[in-house]
Length: 102
Image (cartoon, rainbow, N blue to C red; front, side, top):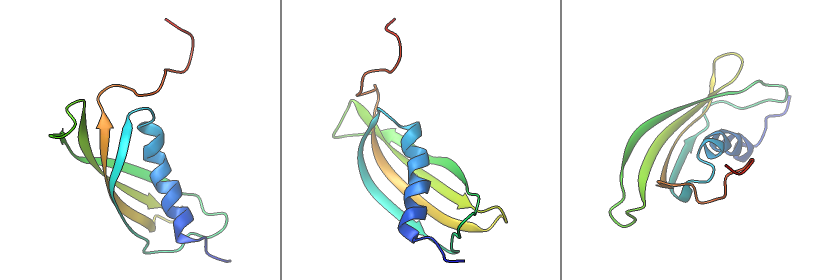
């Protein structure tokens, strides 16, 4: 089977964190990935996210810096993506909340 492009694996992995940070993400400051094994058609992927560090931002007092690690494995337990990212996160959501008004 043909392997999937590494950019697709990276996008799927990072998108998992992006969904968790929806409405608070301000800027992606750093992104590093290693792709030690190929993803193949019909693979089942699982992403694990670990927050490595969080601290207030000195230049943006309404937010802080969050560094996290994302590890994606396939159904055989092989690591297919291993990456870290540093983001500037707002303390309060920047987008309107979805759902009925309170």
